[in-house]
Image 1 (cartoon, one colour):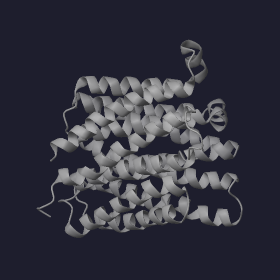
Image 2 (image 1 turned 135 degrees about the vertical axis):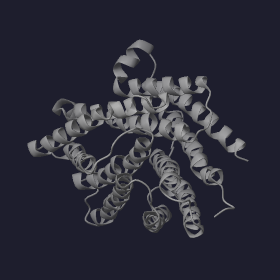
Image 3 (image 1 turned 45 degrees about the horizontal axis):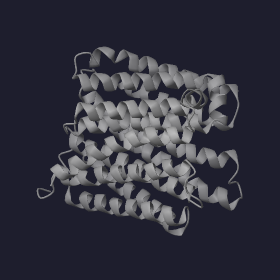
Image 4 (image 1 turned 45 degrees about the vertical axis):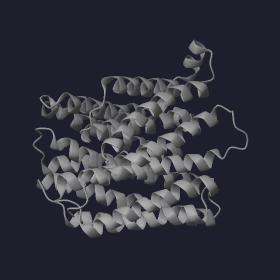
Length: 373
């Protein structure tokens, strides 16, 4: 489709990334307690869906089209536009009504459209066999992850909203999105920039390890030694595999070398999360869960996307972003210590640190949008 440029396609994830950050800033400000009767849950759902589907999902499938196909075809482009309409519908309807008729309808529409879009993508994949297989596994994980949302309706009908199974249906979706399709697609693109000699056994190790890491989510609701054992084995196996990639990234560009170390840190954190004492803390401390999700999103995915955009970002913006991100993580993981040092409400601290993230994202995304015109 010659009339459509890559920059035009990037308009949507970049815009949604900015809008999602704006919603996140409002949300952080609301948590400081300045608003009364603020629909926190509704806005939270809007923020998470826009950032996950509008920004991250959109961006990564564009990378797959770029590196593993001959370009997006006309019909797929129209499906891509339909996906954007669904994201806009979710963004607005979640704020207005939360989980209800319109938000569920737009979410379901996005899911079904993504099936068709990814099947079309599957048929057009090309490149090194093992990398293509890795992308395909990511597509399979996207389909697998949707089992979680499909379970929510029946569980609600059976009045199991407060049961561990309802929570696990959500965790199942998040795991096979974050550590399934999205993580694997990022890894497939990242490995393209390395000197790795990718073998079939590597594909098997990655797949089984990431599936096994779902045990960490199960451990959130169910305390059993077998679940913990699977989580530990999967985390250690994946960490060892990532460690073996060190030489493959040793002589790459500094940005990809740094991304490798972030990936190594993520895999090591999985081992820490396997410890019973840490797992018990996560069960009772929602801040730790948010810190982990933000570490994946803001610490790994966002820098990866920015680097792959080949968009020149001033070093000052990078410093502001990294410092703000790290301070917000410290506040989430050690709220009492941060409060004792600053003598300031932890919610205020989180708003201030997130404001730095907001400024960074705003500068990067808005300059990209204006330069693309």
